[in-house]
Image 1 (cartoon, rainbow, N blue to C red):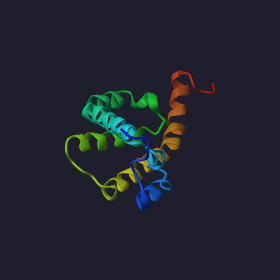
Image 2 (cartoon, rainbow, N blue to C red; image 1 turned 120 degrees about the horizontal axis):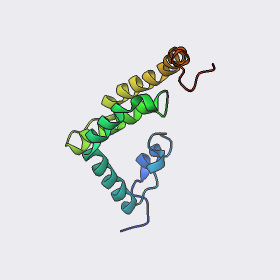
Image 3 (cartoon, rainbow, N blue to C red; image 1 turned 90 degrees about the horizontal axis):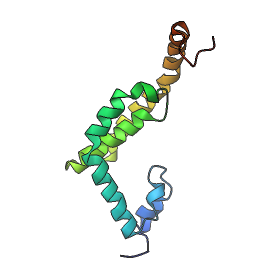
Image 4 (tube, helix red, strand yellow; image 1 turned 90 degrees about the vertical axis):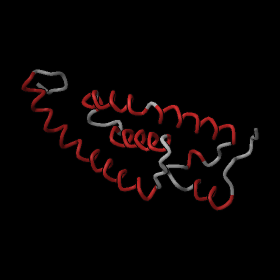
Length: 125
C-alpha cells in the first residue's frame, strides 16, 4: 500500500483540529484498513460485549466513560449492519451519555452510606 496519509486538503486540516478524529488525521491506507477491520470485528460482536458490560455496569461505576463506550459500540454495531448514522444523529446521544456520566458523582455519594451500612469496602467506617 502507501505510507502517505489517506486524508488530504480541507478535510485533513479539519480532522487535525477535531478532537474525536484528530488521532486519525495521519492514517495511511494500510492503517485505515486496520481501523476498518477493527470496526468490523467490534461492530459484529458488539451485542455480546454490550450484554456483558451491562451485567457488570456496577463494577465500572462511577466512571471509565461507560455510557460513552456503550454508545460507541452501539454506533459501530449499526455501521456494520449497514446503517449509516451521521454525526448530527449521534451527537445528541453523546450529549446524553455525557449527562449520564455527570450524574454519577451524586449516585456515588448516595451509594457510599449504603456501603458503610452494609460494611462493604470503600466506606470510611
